[in-house]
Amino acid sequence: MRIIPKANTLRKGMLLYRGIRYRKGFGVHSPFVFNLITKVIEERCQYYSFYDIELIRKQLLFQDDEITYPDRQQKGKMRRRTIGRIVEREAIRPKHGALLFRLANYFKSKHILQFGPSMGLSTLYLTSYASDLKCIALENVPEFASIARIAFGKAARNPVDLRVGSYKDLLPKALKDMEQLDFVFFNTLYEQQNNSWLFEECLKHVHGDTVFVFEGIKTSRKMRELAGSMLSSRSNGDDRPVFNGNRVFQQEVTQEGLYRLFLTLYPKIQTN
Image (cartoon, rainbow, N blue to C red; front, side, top):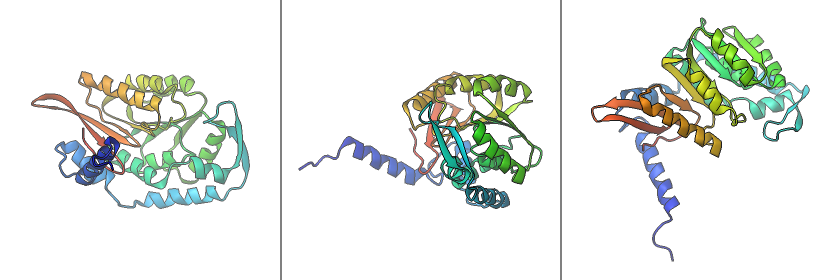
């Protein structure tokens, strides 16, 4: 009979406790993080743009035209699916799209760069909060770009500069064409070999209010290594917030010096 619980069980219990304690912002001392939790993460307001975008999703889901595209998980292989099936599998979920909208709206980002438009739906969420935005979306799968163009043609509130090709080839020109870099969404879960380079190149063009958002940064060893390298680059007095689908990092200067507050963004919040 085992009386002492396993270490993993203790850890999960602690994470659950912290998630319950900090989920609504209670116990969080940073004003930035408290406002982020209460005004962005936990906000449940349904903006009118959400209905328009989800209507586009429904229309795409009913398209039964088949296209062949490269399998991003198994390099060198091709898949053939209907547009509806591709959108169902690959497009951003409504909950995460709404979070992108609220983040862009909260930080009032005017110049947005995106890697991987996610069938165009994530781009629509990012660019629907205002009508005077500039967005450059980079897509390395031409077949996905064709679906994104359908979505942009139906519901884009701002012109979207969609560029197709290798991210490494497209990024230098995109950074040059951006007047400034306010918001970058890295939907690059299947580009793990290039993520560090993409991050470092974008880092050269940021300003004090630039926000980075990463999709699935804790889902693999390479992505976790990228998170570690980002934290290391932030240890030299860099206080830009970095967000991703699982974590939010905020660094701030206190009387005791520089420290890092580490939070789980969704579904629970914890501190280290």
